[in-house]
Length: 68
Length: 152
Image (spheres, rainbow over the protein chains, first blue to last red):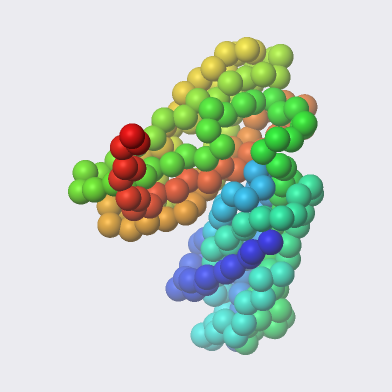
């Protein structure tokens, strides 16, 4: 199985994260962290986009993403 | 963050837990994707049958092919409602909302103008309201192709 990831960090979107208050320091919020593709035919390439929200008071840095 | 899932050899129920490491607290967070991967010649009985296993928007020249139709047949034995769960921003999707038992309905995918000069491999996910709330993810491909040579 091939699993590849490309990351795009969004600017501060408190509303998207559903969080009204700012957390001290850098903080990553995931409004949705689970996705079910359901039935997928073998060999098909499918994709899903997760929103990554920076909801802390400091700049969030993505250090590494491990495909899983 | 876009997760691209391409199960080439594995099949059955699968899940993966991609992990994001940041300078925040906690340092590591996970997301979860899951799927049930089946072979094309599966004996699984699905509540619906699609006329194509993927939606294709092949581009052969300067003329843009910007729409693709697909058909979904309801083979569940009962009326079904369909809910579009996710579609990428590169396309707009007209998905039938309801198919009578034994009936067939058509849908359409249309390219957004912003995708005229790019190729992409994305997918749409939809769900039907059978007992299992079966969910399906179908690839959508837009890519440049060479015209087929006429056969002798």
